[in-house]
Image 1 (cartoon, helix red, strand yellow):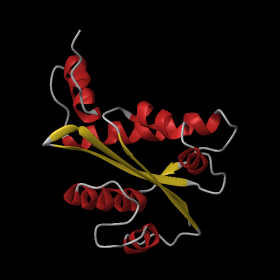
Image 2: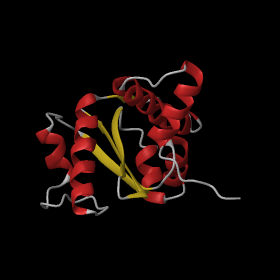
Image 3: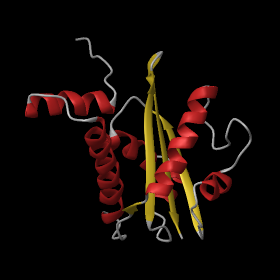
Length: 159
């Protein structure tokens, strides 16, 4: 049996069309996957009796800027293509952090899949289950030239 790789956004779009009979707006699509990654991270935290995280638009902007930068360079690294660091990117987005961390993944999967992948890695798991963070923002994007390059950037912090 042949299985096609479907990006998380395309999967949500297909489900929405099936349920609604039409394609949702881009803003609705964005809200759906954002709610999903927040739900998946908070489910992992709840399993460890940790408090839930809240969505933060400045952290999402930090994640989106880094994801776009990495896509341009075709890299997956915590350092930006111009050498910038996570603290620098967060400060540029106006996030005055006391604590900040970042998880990256290259995974043609949905939010549940990427969170499971991160939970299998000691460093990523430590970031997800950090009791000292209270907020998150994220970005995901597929490389139009290679859909296997679904990129995920998750930034967590506390101001």
